[in-house]
Image 1: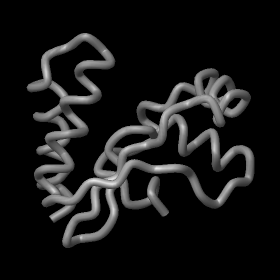
Image 2 (image 1 turned 90 degrees about the vertical axis):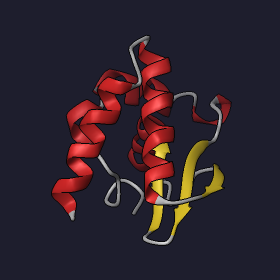
Image 3 (image 1 turned 180 degrees about the horizontal axis):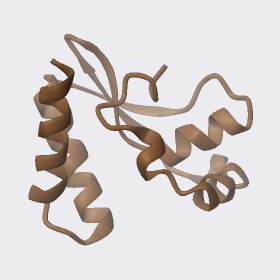
Length: 104
């Protein structure tokens, strides 16, 4: 359900080798981050971990829950993704903002 409600296309940025690697060490990884928004739950950090759990047949994952608006969630996702990749937060924020507009 989290991947289906994602603000970005998960398959577009999932690395299959990383998903396989995470599946072998899922219990050692930090929880995913999910925002509870008025529109529903949004996965903002942890796509590879969720995909690894799905690959293992798990129906649940440990998650750190935050509350806020969809915009808050998208900002968090852009900041977390940018930090992980060593890029400016504006680049992913711009992409997510465009995708968010397309979904409305």
